[in-house]
Structures are given as structure tokens and as C-alpha cells.
Length: 382
Image 1 (cartoon, helix red, strand yellow):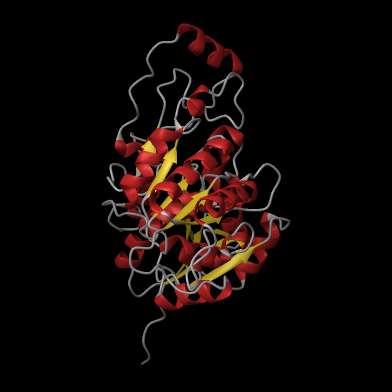
Image 2 (cartoon, rainbow, N blue to C red):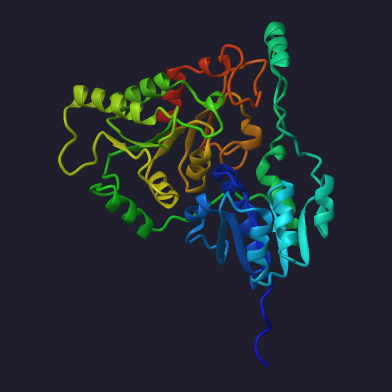
């Protein structure tokens, strides 16, 4: 008699890069609890490269944004999955599993989605919704100018939401830091593709910079301050800056890279032969897999609250993050309280507002000075 067929579990992944990284502790715990199961991750095609070679799953399936839930479910039906674990809270993700005919479907309950699940998981008492403030509420809070309320507890962090879900399948909910594996071969491919002479040599610092954020400008520290901070850090350390970003409207990364390069050449002349340029402009030039490898080569990343922030922390790189409209207690890098990471805030009565753009004077970000960011970067870089 042959070996029994392994249980086939389909995990419906989340759609945003930062959220995807925050699911990795839950996937690690599920892998440990079901070592013989075959785990397949279903994810949007834009995140495919993030999961390539990651040991927490056995296979990756993708869908396109233009595909309907029925179309996705029809493809899944042919795979014969035994169980589905639904990480997003959306009705659509549960509908995909239902259309796929997966007999056991686990996810958070809520609304008519309840009818699509066979195992409905109750939300944690510590879970907090991200309340988007209205214009009226923001105006009132600014006018009253009271001290900001106490921050949420560490247990409210979104990483724990996913751990709570896998606990319903018998996995441990004990916290783990988000983790993405980067191999020496991954780093070599990155260096070769970017035509860099090698990893940082003795005494050479590589520092990353990511000045964009997909959600909107309210999450973005001003571009001119990014440039000023990068120039000052480079003046004091002669570091190389690796500038990451996506070529999209409003992303200032390429302009920041050019400004820092000009200043470096004026101060130091050309970079010495056999070393990396003063500024390596990677805007639009790296896949998600290469983003992981590039960030792993950096000593620290200066970034907005964004997907690359989470990636950096997950590959072991400290981050410095000016926070404005969002909450590090809910979506900060790594696990709450990790001393390697510096989440900088200005005490503002209306923050976090969770808005895409600021309806008042952007005080939550303009209150974070260049000098404060520079000192945090130097401290994190060691």
C-alpha cells in the first residue's frame, strides 16, 4: 500500500505587498503544524516573485485582476484541494473558494460571507479597525489641539490577525517576526543584473532609500526632506545610496537619486574605481525578488510606511520610517517593539487619520525634522 495522499491546502493570500509580508509568520506556523501537507498559495500575479523560493509554501498559483471570482474558482476546482484558508476579509476571496468547491473553508466571519465559510473564525478582542477620519473630525481635533490618545496595544498589530486564523487549523499563534529568505545566489543575481562590483566592502556602507508609497501622499515624508537627509547622511559617512521605487506619477525617488548624486560628486568627486556608484538608481529596475536581495545588502532602509518597509524588516534590514497618517502599532515593521527599527512620529492630534491625502496642513509629517531622521539612520546603521 502506498503512502497516504498528503492533505492539499489552498491559502488565499492578500493583495498588497506589505500585508503579504505580514502573513509570513502565520505561514511559518502553519507549515510547522502541518509538515506533511501540500500548501499552495493563491496570490495576485503582481506578487508572484515575492514567493518564489520561499520555503513556507510548496506551490504558488496566481490570478489576474481582470479575472472574476467565478473564473478563478473554476480553475481552482480542477486542483482538488481539501481545505481552504482565506487570509483576506473580502467577500470575493471567500467566493473564489466556494466556486472552487473546496469542502472545508476557513476564514474570518462577517456579513453574507458567513454563508461561504464552513469554519468561521471570530475576531480577536485586541483587533482594531483602521478608522478613516472625516474632514470634520480632523478639523475639530486640530482646533481642540489636545494631546493624541494613547496608542493601541502591541497585540493589535495585523501580524497577529493572521496568526489567529492559522490557530483555527491547529497551528501555534505564538508571535514570530515576518521573514523572507534571501540566499547568496539571490544576492549574486541582484549584483550581476545591476552591474555592481560586489557586496559592500570593509568600511563601505550601503543604505537604502524608498520615498514612495502606493496608498497615497499622506503616507509620504516630503521629498525634499528625503533628499536633504540622504545628502547629510552621505556627507557624514560616504555611504552609497540604493534608491528603490516604482516609476509612477508622484513617486519622487528618481529625482531624489539625481539630487543626491549631484551633491556627492560635488563633495567627493567620482566614486573610487572598483566600488559602487555614490547613488544606485533602482527605480523601476528590480523585480520583487531583486528588491528582497537588494534590501538584504543594505545596512538600513530609510522609507515611508510601504511594502518595501515590510520587505526590508523581513530580510533582516533595520528600517527608519517617518509615520504620519498610519499607525506603527497596527502595521509597523517587524514585530512590535523590535529595537532595530525606528518609527518616527510627530505628536499630532489628528494622527493617525488613515487618509490618502491630508485635508489640513500635513503637520504629522512636517513635524518630523531632517536632523531627527539623520540621527535615526546613523544609529540604525551602527
